[in-house]
Image (cartoon, rainbow, N blue to C red; front, side, top):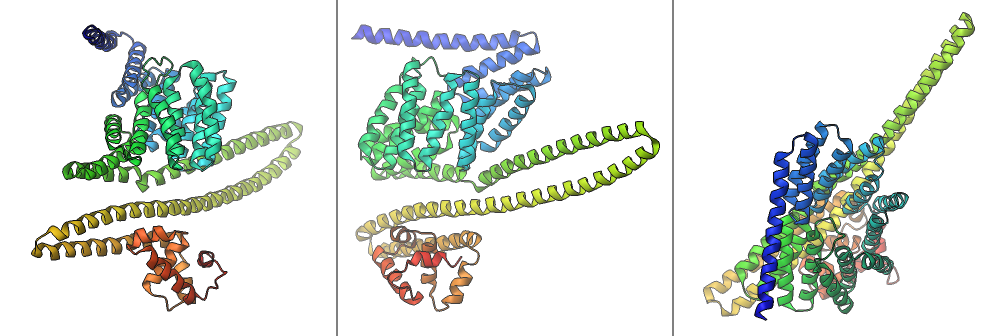
Length: 551
């Protein structure tokens, strides 16, 4: 046994020594590089090395250095390739705006210079950005285009990634059975190629679907397969940062084990997940793991640690759901569509003008009078066509403005739903604090009991008032005429009844309304019964349908 341990220690030392020699060698080659192209190549190689070491920030520095060098030397393919790699790092770190800008630049250069090997990768990654802003139709179209182009390039190895992403979209929109079948089809290829990292990611995605549907046994089965696959370091196929997949798997493991009440395992994987995520700025996994750790430490009565992780959870949750990020992405995508329309119109206009000029020259060769007459006719025709073109462009601008208004409305609807989820979660947290204070009250001194009760009352009152104010602002942005119609038809409603009408207009369940308003389910049901009477709604008539008819 001692010999085995000693042998493993020596092997680990040799591996560390070899890695140290490798990075020193790469830095030496960069320092000794004579030409700019050689420096760019060595910088790109250092970027690739740091990617494999799961150090994305250092990788970003060297890829950016390589990109600048290749731009100065007019090495367009290498410049585009390293720009795309920078986009990939930004995408992994949830910097979606920067990622989309870089991908759009790469796509433009790749089309102009026929860099066919890069274009399918760009479509696949742009699809991932669209997925983040919940534009699932455009995301799916991008993935399908990427898959088609990979097949045209005979690139079977990379063609599986857009297929994986289509399965991911199916899972998000609720087509779980179809998503699972698509994922299982991918496992055959990953097993054949021994691509353990991608295989682990597929198993983890299936586990997440089963966990979402509360089938914890199946979720646990696939999670364990994912953990076994990700811990196999013999994967020679993967060229990207395995930390991105590891962090997602560890976070999923923490959620599953926490749900099953296995707190030690949940804590173990949450700590592993948050460590990897913080090192590489994976924001989603940071706030998910932080929330689990906060609740675990809370159960263990370790208040200081619980508060630290609650603060981490709130900070990163707000960063990820930042409305500016989503709004800017939508505007950037829409601007790109608008520029494409303008560009196409400009090409058509230039083509038509060239056609008219050639016709004018032919008329001049025939006779002066005929040429003069032809010129006059052509000028009149061009003038009319230009007017028509301007009218057409104006109509297209109006359509784009209408589309923008619809997108803004959709964004506000999504923002309203996200805000409600956030408020419900915040209220649950506040309710939890109130319960703990109530539990402390019997053991407190008489002078402190009144103070504790006062704090409980203030927490509930302030949270309820602020929650309603935040909700009402966003609700009015989406449903402008609802309150006017409600007051017009039913002027005798109380404020509490108006609130319940607004919640029901969003199709919220009795349990969800109870969680937000701090009222019992029984009280909400009674309020709904009284509301029916005031609104003169028959027993057979749907209350929510009636409220939705009020715009």
